[in-house]
Image 1: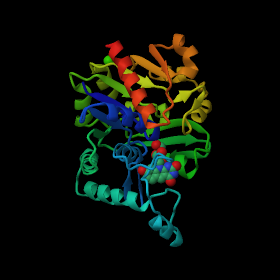
Image 2: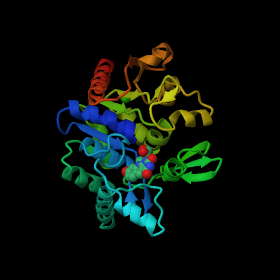
Image 3: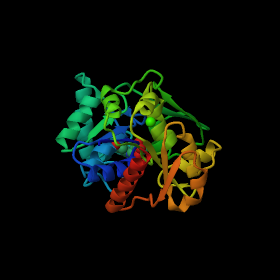
Image 4: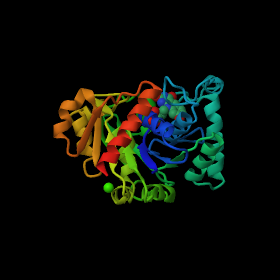
Length: 310
Ligand code: FO1
Ligand code: CA
């Protein structure tokens, strides 16, 4: 049966790619966080959706995880020469996608329609779905004031100390019909929560109206994969933020964060001593996804684990 994965940016896209490569065409739906989205130079920027598009189309810059491979930076450099901001690095090729999306949106397309068109033109045989067509903006209350996500993450390099997270608009935003249909498929095999940042990437998805209920209604087991290995995050500020929120940076904290929603939790072999303390069924395996075969193997294991929990 089909599979749904909930994903943030880089870490989530790696597992989404593993799932995409082992599943038949058109059987994967990737529900993507849009809380990172913002406007810049009049363009609508959707970093996590674009990371999913570029990763599944095999166009991504493999080292940084976001943006395109074989990128050039003429426009960004020229902007700087003219006195413009260049803290958010938009490459020349990436800009083409931003122009097209901004135009589609201004013509009245929904974000879902827009991404559907882009994915089709990139030859992607999976559904890449924004979590909602309504705007949700992740903001962080920090020791340096309340900051929009990209202001915190990119411009200030996650330096400010985080006090709390806010998902502005989530209290009225709803999952799109496409997301609800994907979750309601009667033969759904698994819902996978990717190893993305639980607080910055997955929580915005879970916070929109009706999303948790839709996950709970789904017939398939819900499996989360830990983004924390041995007390450290694989990538990004997850562990730093957990410390700042007075949470123990451990896979167990992540499992407890998801406990009302999940049927199973996958953690790294480094943390296998935590298996007995998990609030749900657990699986320990190598969760570090360095190579493409790693991603495919982890995807196989996660689905095998889901099949056992049916
Ligand atoms: N991340 C950065 O750390 N620095 C950047 O300059 C940057 C530019 C950028 C441009 C387009 C895009 O789609 C993503 C971009 N990202 C950049 C990633 C983005 O900040 C994501 O929100 C994070 O990776 C978190 O998922
Ligand atoms: Ca369920």
